[in-house]
Length: 236
Image 1 (cartoon, rainbow, N blue to C red):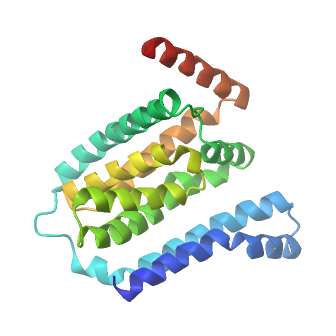
Image 2 (image 1 turned 180 degrees about the vertical axis):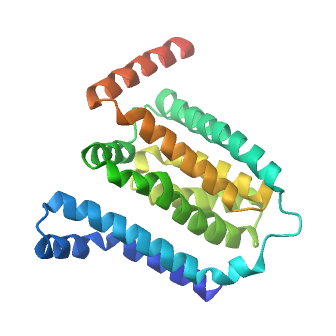
């Protein structure tokens, strides 16, 4: 793995934990609440991490796309199909968690993001745009891409998908995150363009955020209970 890739990973890790120091600094310097300090620092740190990542990966950009990389029209087709594939994989993984593993539906990580987004809509740019770019560059371009050079697709996708799942700090739903990671890895290999999983990842997050934005936690919980009842009827 090139040295610059390690620096990208280090940048991502620092960004994840920087709020511990950065938010109190903003709170001390500006007339804002502690909640606003966390939100503003999160946005600033994500943007900074993205800029640093893109600068570090300039050599990759200069290399251009692979000779057999998909054309623009194919990119569009796979981007649209990829959204349906990712949602399908997520749904199947969710059913397995509920029916076979007895895990309740609903991601705690997603719920936290939605709670923050309702309180501070500007936070939406992180899950909808910045995070997908960063995560696909790191988990598909760097981690999966490096593993894929040394092993077959299944094991490379499995390892990178598991890391992708654990980084979301929601181990209960690791199967759901890993299933999406598999789809993103497949799209990357199929098209040989990292922009495709980035588009699909961003589209998924945006759809989920917008779909839940206008709903109260009580309404979301009621919809989850209805879905669970329907799944029980289908399975029984």
